[in-house]
Image 1 (cartoon, rainbow, N blue to C red):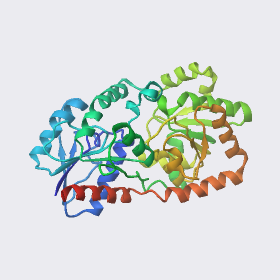
Image 2: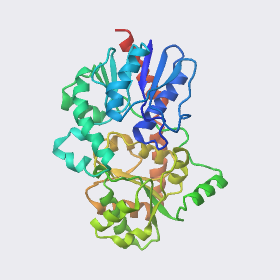
Image 3: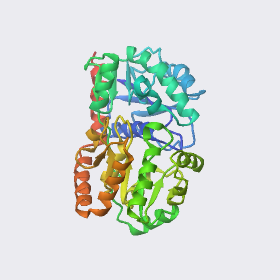
Image 4: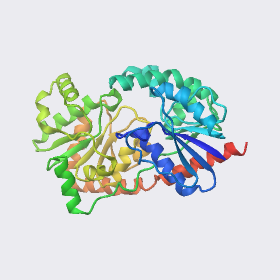
Length: 381
């Protein structure tokens, strides 16, 4: 079977969420499947070493225009030219017209949920807002023509099934994994080098937020302000890949401008250096309003960092009993979680131990095995 995998953004330098999922899928399929032929459709960019070819995995660089044009015009042409038997689109959207069966990984449908659309998809960059508009147009049309739809949690599977009235035969929940390099680093020299490179504070909590409203950045910053006021502890908040202008605007919005002096912005951190950022943190904050999975929860757990996350959407399903769950709409609950982790060493240790156990349940190898099974189902039709 000749299998095409869309990985449009895998050669860009700053890879995020869905890019990493697609990358891990490919790397693990390369270990599992030596029989089928694979064609990896990637848009040319700077990080061309992110994916390597093997005997049965060929990289097909597909030039083209903006994201929708590339996907609707140039990708179908490449699929036809390589005589693929099926195409797997890995990041929610897909071409509307294809000559072969289609598998789509639909990570979430947040942008389609009108009852909470403004709250969950508001904010963000112009690129993010455009992406939401394109997905809102594309996804309902693609779903009708997809032979298999993969999503990443049972919570999201139920949301998608209810929204589109899809049968369980076409819709599958396949958990994401957590990469093997997310483990505590025991090399003191490397730890010190990374701490110095990003000028990490001595004591800090770590928050992966952005300007998209579903990430609850204003509420998390308010909770951090309450924590400092309640405890008087000299603890900083570390944030990655976040603009100082955006931070200033949010702190003004929540009436906490003086908090800026206690927030450290690192800029972009490559994925292979993230484990040290996690493990040196006193706690990891992930109190989103809505997530379809939440890979950072597992990354923190594997690095031995106590996690505070939300009691909503998929997060309890993924975190298991290895996290402190809070109502993300109540900053005082997030604050109380931080206080308990700082003041109760036994509770902190319990979260760390349970987090280690929970994270072991998730692997990219198992994810790739389940996806390969879906490919084989379609090949047998």
